[in-house]
Length: 190
Image (cartoon, rainbow, N blue to C red; front, side, top):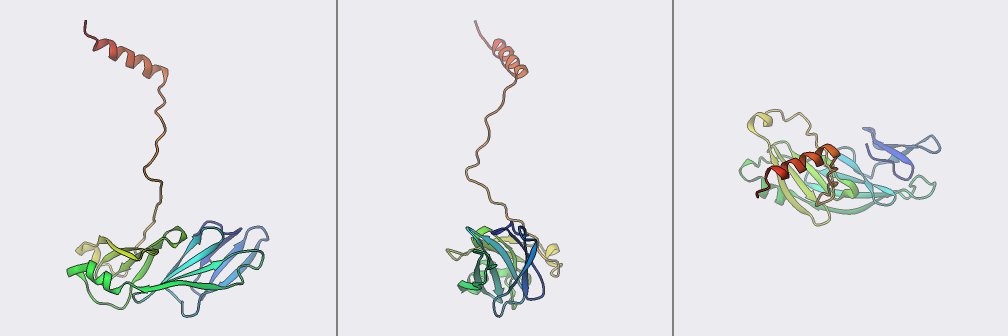
């Protein structure tokens, strides 16, 4: 589930729309999906105020934006940001494990639709696509045992953090200080 966007929490349904709960007014909002989108999509919160919808139709990725401004519940509708094919890159990266099939599954989408993880069940390969630069990378190859369970959905939980990580300074207590003094005294040569 997405974090609240402009005071609304959104949930994907299997009925051709996204359901939103306006937390302030305690009312429900229904957002119809873009034309042609029925399944194989995920939502991502947009920086500022809105939501992205990333969908895969066979090997064609499409990214849609729905702005959430004012009290009109985003009546502006979905705006197609970009669409492109990843077939050639996926086939090249999968190498010998490539098995032609008709589709990719959208497994996870990062914040601001920066990246998407795609599952190619026939080949057992997980791809990462940086959507702005359109760079495709192979990030995981299932083993033969894992590959047997094609019907099992892949669960990916992307975690983002600052880099490099910043750790707090160690807090040295009184017991540790006296211990350090004793160790220093042990190794003092006269």
